[in-house]
Length: 353
Ligand code: MRU
Image 1 (tube, rainbow, N blue to C red):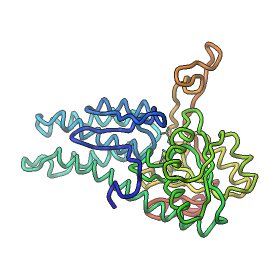
Image 2 (cartoon, rainbow, N blue to C red):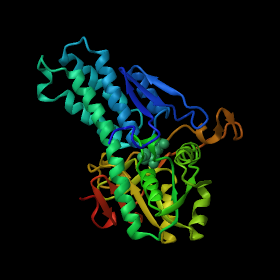
Image 3 (cartoon, rainbow, N blue to C red):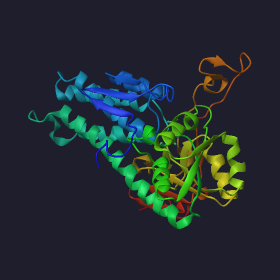
Image 4 (cartoon, rainbow, N blue to C red):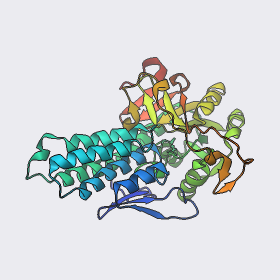
């Protein structure tokens, strides 16, 4: 499958030694491309959420390494290796929770230190560029595999023709294209497994209101945006058959860290006996961690809560606490869908294929 066949949105473009990112801070009002000519630009883009969503962050970081390689093209390879390790450390620190970032950097590091890289006849920069492109393409392909697997699982396990409820943005904007949970939603809608979507607004950054709504509108999938706190009472009304979310990191025991609000949603879904599906590529797995409590949770500036687009909403000097992810224990998750297969009831056996 090529990158242009299906998904209408492609938010990450590598073109003529430049990384172009569709600026997610400006959507849906403006479609502006943020151009990264240097690794510093990529670090800034990840930190400031020009690019966001676990798989998309990983892909951007891989291209960030390629930009550094071009910047040091005149150095002997052994010298460039030292400089690039330093660059990778800067990229890794840009955001702490999504493990796809560290995963992609580990892939790039493997190429950088592969046996043949010091061989004069090998174009080491070309090898790094090929690896970044491969990570990008593999994520795109994996999304379609997960969409099929997830839709098949829903067809067999939930009442047909009801609505799905989703949180945050897990679509083409958060990945190489098509999406994880939103990819399953797209495919499930095409197959009439679901009839529409409730979209959590996703406070405070409003990934749902701004980004998921924008993607669903382009696909002509019926949706309604709801405030996050409406989700539990909507689940009680009986029109929702499944809750679908993505993940930023999944521990060995199946605990999932995802956008803040996912845990509350999981509790509400279980109480109302509605299935909770987590959709994430294997690049989101962190099998070095035994449980989700070990996963670092990013906290961001209080101004994300207390102000909106520069307008201060709270009383002067108000303080805010802004953890942007939370941990959902495996026991609240019915199924985790990866490109390698489906893990039902992850609490029983943890992550194994
Ligand atoms: O802070 P964000 O917008 O980067 O958080 C994104 C999420 O939490 C997504 O649910 C997750 O990364 C999966 S995206 C396919």
